[in-house]
Image 1 (cartoon, rainbow, N blue to C red):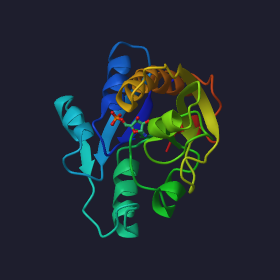
Image 2 (image 1 turned 45 degrees about the vertical axis):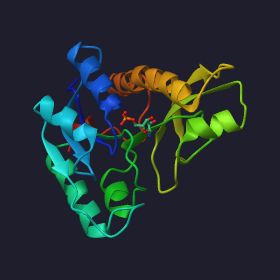
Image 3 (image 1 turned 180 degrees about the horizontal axis):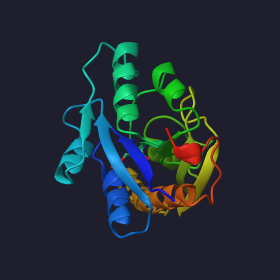
Amino acid sequence: MKPLRLGVLGSGQGSNVVALAEAIRHGEVPAEVVLGASDLKDAGILLHARERKLPVHVCRQGAFRTKLEPGIERELAGALASAGVDLVVLAGYMRVLKEPLLKKFPGRILNIHPSLLPSFPGLRAWEQALKARVAQTGCTVHWVNETVDGGAVIRQAKVPVNGGDTAESLHARIQEAEHRLLPEVIRDLAIGKIPWPEDPRKDGGR
Ligand code: GRF
């Protein structure tokens, strides 16, 4: 089976991209990152992608903070499609996806979120978990739709909340779990162990 072609989108430091790239390098995930993209020109994810000599796409700056302008999102979708991306991976991408991306990659966009969804969607989910005094939280990989963190759950990993946890210590442990979960899910999608809404590699790919 052909390796899965990944386009990775993020607005943050990019630790999940590094974990994924390392898992691929060690032969644990039959995939390749063919494009790293960000809505922010200084995002760590772009630094990591460039260090690894991966092609990058930086979105033009627009007027909104929570979403891309349709024209800018169309350019991003076009860059992902030109790179031959099979699966779009959101790793800390901080804008809500709209029609240009959702239509171009139906059932082929996933996100990693730092809580056990449907609990604590939205921003700073680890702080929400601490505030709610839950005994455990974790992380979720889910399919992406037009809602915020509301698409079908693919797989989750639990992380206990310890008595002395601060927001930082809890977030760090959730991120460790994310760095294992995301590559595992992508491996299982690549080898067909997790079903796809629509597998792009069938019938010779796109
Ligand atoms: C992760 O905690 C992810 O769950 C959330 O954004 C964060 C991105 O972290 N959606 P990084 O940029 O991969 O380090």
